[in-house]
Amino acid sequence: MIINYEILIGIFILLIISFLVYLGYKQMIDFLKSLGAKIERLLPLKASLYKGQNIYYLEFSPYGLKITTNLKVNGYLKITKKFLSSGFDIYYDDKNWADNIINNCKILKLTESNLKLLISIEIIGNKIQIILNTQNPKSFKSISEDLLEEVKIALEILQEVVDSINNLTNTFPSNSSISLSKENLRKWLIYYIPIGSFIIISLTTLVLGYWGTDTLCKDELFINSFKILSIIFLFYLILVITILRKYLQAKINIPILLILYFGGYMLAPFTIIEPLNKMLDKSKPIKIQTTIIDKYTNDGFYLEFSDFKCNHQFFKKQNSYCSYKTSENIYIKLNRGDTVTLYLKKGAFNIKWVYNIKIN
Image 1 (cartoon, one colour):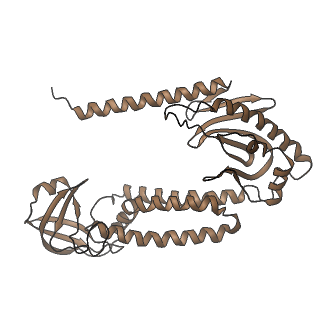
Image 2 (image 1 turned 90 degrees about the vertical axis):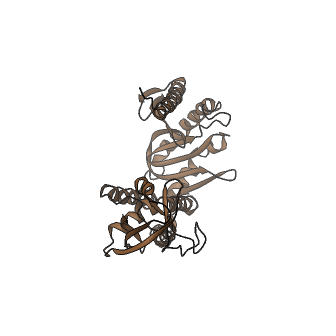
Image 3 (image 1 turned 60 degrees about the horizontal axis):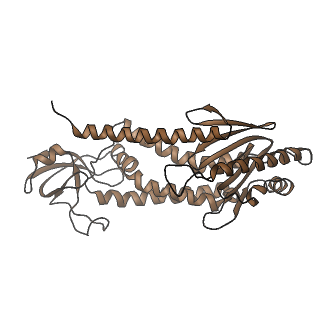
């Protein structure tokens, strides 16, 4: 009987990960129950807690513990902790409405109460939510020891905040004139459209079978991708700024766009640019006979051909030979000095790719 140790190691690692996930999940459930909360659902984990006439929903998110409840007002206001300094930044779309909330209720009591784990306070539509940091600096496995006490304090203050806001509805318009229209527009422009477009185009090229490593020169792919993506990203950034203008909330949203752009530079060359370069290519294959001058392995199987050198200084020195990633089957069959016939296509984005390769 042949034992595949790689499979056994994989199963063992999977079991360890599953066990650690179970322990973390159990710890979150125990934490919520210690507050007296009722578990509403397990996936994703959500609990409810009644205090007075209000019901609070507690959820663990990637950002921390989120506590949400309903209000009798409707608008948008965000108070978030500064990234590199103390204090909080305040964001809003309707200044008059936000000023009434800030000046005539107790919402700032949350920021003034020395809640060390408080990350943000946000009124979104007719809901208010606060987020508390759950990270324990002493251990990556456990919830912060201070979280339980801070949640109890935060809930007491939040109850006062909710009552003070609801009691103000008789003295000023409860609904913002802008409401959530600008916030929804920001979400579409900054998150949904770029991320959705990336996913849709990537999945389309994958389903149609255009994913693969047929590009002749890796450096050419990265250089041309950088040029194309930079133009797209710059155009989209100008478009977002033009549409949102004073509602952009640049201090918080421009860094998010830049992070998304950085991710795009890392992923899009392989999932969008390279597949579309082949998919949209209408050129005819050119037959070229060349010689293998080198072969090597480095996260894949690579060949270098005598007739193709890099014209760009990116990963390699200028005038060094292009690295073509091939299959293991072809790599094994070829040796240095062997002659092969390449059928090359120009590429829709001027990134040459190997349509076919024949061993002579």
